[in-house]
Image: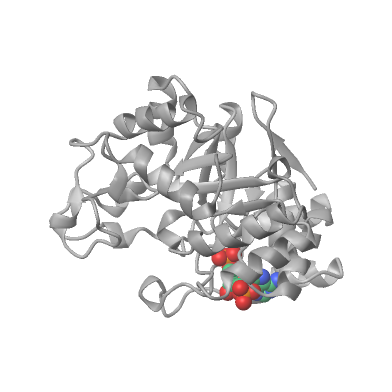
Length: 317
Ligand code: A2P
């Protein structure tokens, strides 16, 4: 398994298990199985509303000695309603309680979007707080304080554009070590990956399989299915692998970390094995030309009329 090393020597397994959309009642068993299969990197978030059940599974595996805390890499994310100075640390402490951990390996600012306290998903302009009122830099300073307090070992961001990352890197004492963004052959974002690499920021690819299990409100009727894309299927057959394995291997081969979600033991096993799949330069080239800058998670749910957020200023494009 490929690992990404940070300036302090910490090593993050390149492939992690995603838990967005992993439902309570199912996610606990999925985590237990994943740890048995050999997953050591679990990607969580408060807004997935499943951290307490993940915590029970982690507690079980750590308690019976199946894994040690040092072998695990656990990421969680600050929800948008806790960007205010007084709310950051309590939000992280709640995730720690739910996950039954003393510290996180990585804590990410989930979106460059602030919501009023208690708002889980925005329904009206009044639900938002402008970034003029709570600048991203102010939230970041609180994340830095969480590192200093020993609550998390590393901090990073998610859904950040190059413009926002550049501003944060320029103004912060502790630099972000990860930017987690949607990334797959239809949304390759080579300039963002390159900028991150040049600034010691590891890029983590979310929705690497296209997140077909997104809620209907987040789906377009005519969106492409990467698992059935003829070129991905061709490369899969060429390598005696599945399309999902090709998508995962492509992400790792180009130097990004990747967090495919599954709650199915067979698919979890298959996805983990993809970390050993080395695609040839010719296969990589044939996938690299598929880029369409197509987002499955396009952020339009933050662009409600009357709010200061637009799809254009979210992605800075
Ligand atoms: P399941 O959890 O039932 O396995 P993403 O990681 O892009 O969010 O995609 C997650 C979706 O892809 C889920 O619907 C998940 O279903 C499915 N999935 C995960 N692994 C595979 C695989 N190896 N083959 C096909 N579908 C998969």
